Length: 244
Image 1 (cartoon, rainbow, N blue to C red):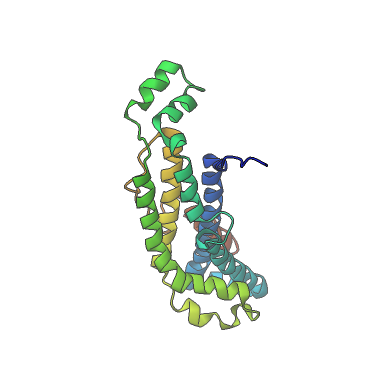
Image 2 (cartoon, rainbow, N blue to C red):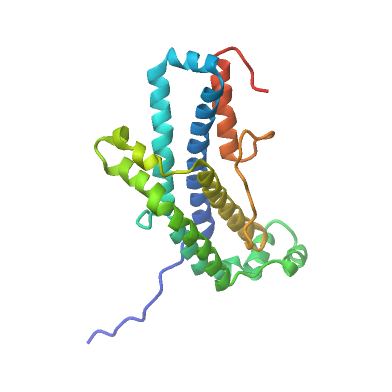
């Protein structure tokens, strides 16, 4: 008679890799969204730039369409609970890696680049991650999911599954809100920043820091800000102008 093998839980995913994957997806989403806004905003303000764009209108309509579609597809990858690397799976990976997000693990990681004593001193006031941290982060994700699903999720589903593509998208887009989307991207960005700082430096992820995307920024810092500024610089070059 075969003996029943004891249950061995699966190995937790590499938390640094999961955080990095999330960074790539949330930055791709903010880049396409703010590049779209950069083009839209400048064309609304500058008739001369609009005239230059209209000389190659098909290309710019295609670019506008591609940026719009990509924004919602990337958001779907982040929020869709069936996608391979969504925000819920990210927080599940955090929960599964609580020991890796504690002071002892941080001390070992720091000990690879500084002396053992320096590492021990460094982690004395660092954060020991607990399950309540994960629960609070999940609470904030749920709040944004309630905003995402009935509006932005509907746009994403329409673009992904409707054979007519953008031909009937206007009623869905009418429900969206640019300022709300900026806040959504701000949340996703600070979630990544909080988790990577927790892993690398043991900083308490809570409360989440505040980041506001309100381009054009004086000094572009985040990928979305840079995409906004570079989209406008590209358009201004068409009329022989350099951005301020």
